[in-house]
Length: 435
Ligand code: GLY
Ligand code: MN
Ligand code: MN
Image (cartoon, rainbow, N blue to C red; front, side):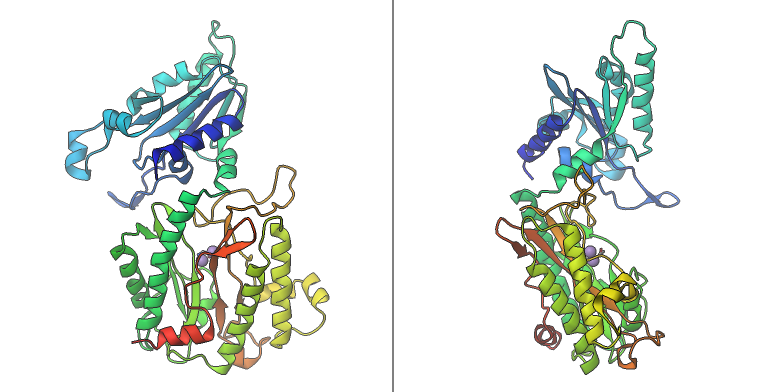
């Protein structure tokens, strides 16, 4: 993404701040075991504001009535680090690459914070992050507080993530392109899984087939832990074990997608392992699909998210009545939350730099947000009938189905960004039986 996009975002954030200082830190390195680490993944808020992907770096923005200033603190180039882990951009390289006002060695951060925080009243940090770097900033503020010559001190600490994540809610065309790229690779991966799936395979073999598509197309990684759930495993919502057999006559639910330049996709398809839906599977599948299509079709600017949630629950409750799983009046069943037993999760979530983008769901007054063009969300209804659940007609037991697409709100309605992934019974059976 071009440097101008990061510059514009910092300008937007500064315009939302009172006079003060904002500090956003990079993600820490996470140990996997002993002295080996998980692949590094930058903090999404930090990346959103400056595009820098290295660890041990800090972005600082300052604002007074007269001026604004941006600082990036980075690790200096180090030959030993370059030998073992690769060269860092370093202070000079970062100065050339990024359009911040000042780049400094991270080693000078602690000392410089006393200068930077001087005479500022408001401090904006991630309140829920226990980074030692934020403690260092607070210590610097405390030192200034006790200095007689300093006239103004930090008196208020604000959550900077709320401001950044409010900006992240509306995606720019460049961000939408990133998401579309992730989805286009994910599309190939889901189609590959449908084509290669055979009874007798293991769940992890489908995962491996998809990961091959992700990595060989340059995607950074799975956007989240892949769920490849054969048969009754689909009724465990966060099933990530993926080690079971794929059995003839069962469905497999795959919730897997890749990340492109830190932008996520999040797609679920459920299809027959042997390539042909049974009658009972087809009934449940089409019930979920019908709900999903209706919910997607109701999306347009102005519609409120809590209305969409309610509408999806009504449709799922109706589907459960039609399937003969629930009996009685929809309203009474919903009041008693009977439908929740078989449809326990929400209809969807924001998606962007994080698969579950942590953007606000309500406005400042606590009202559910109304959709606006540029928002991206998942729509993912599901019905889950456990194999041992005797409240469910026998023919449906052991069936778990979720169908998930990624939807962009547009000026006039919506665009289903993942519309090209096989979804109807006919499309899926066609793809499963393609040679
Ligand atoms: N893959 C996680 C979710 O659908 O929310
Ligand atoms: Mn998902
Ligand atoms: Mn999702």
